[in-house]
Length: 306
Image (cartoon, rainbow, N blue to C red; front, top):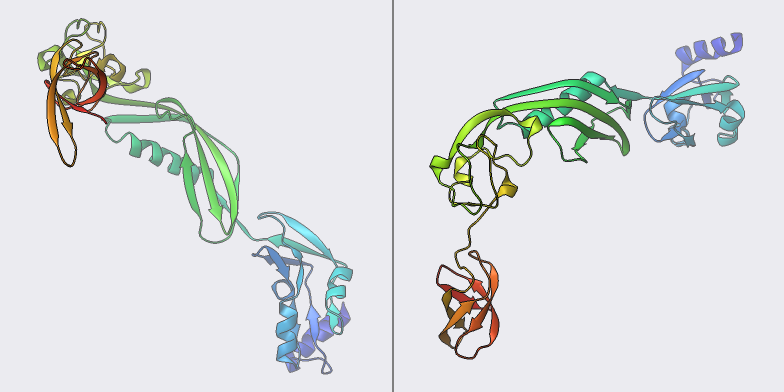
């Protein structure tokens, strides 16, 4: 101990010891990178600046994971730096510098993600938030990504938050109970199957969305659609209960248009199935009795696909 103290005093007074390069390693050191370099854990002094620089870059091994530690033996360090005066304890504890993303921050990020995607709702209530997993990262800037494997944002919600800093990743699982209230489209009266829905058939009511699936929040999305089956009075209307009505019905006589860069021809045909605008349906050419595939353009016109 007295020898090391004497060396330290000489360092302070002269900066060198007997013209030699001296390396002093404390019992514990902290590193930030993926590799432990001598310059990260030791004080190096000497007359030759190039040699000092070379010694600082000597790699002693891989750094421990963020927030953990490992030990280096004096013999390991000595084997890597011959020809210098080494002052070092028998074992050196090396700690990896780290940062912990606290549960409060994880909760804040998760709830912000949910609220942003439910911004159309008039009220959002997030409760019973639980976090599983400890996020420990290297020091420095970090970024994150929120994953929603189930796709659910209402009721029991589970999210995965992935964090990354300096090539290291960590994740946390977030579980929450989510309720949101918004005005949805509701049947004002009983709607029968294949009914062309009008505005008078509908009304808007505020509902808890957690118990609903496929709800619709805009009347304009429903008016003009056709019901697929019975919709009870007061029931929220779902996307799977309505459809765009066909503009061409099976058996209807239509005009077939055939267009090429050089010619445009028309013929009469009979629709063999219902079709909506833009859909392809089977049509029989009434002149040739041949069946073709055509795209529905409007109520009375189809375009032959060739």
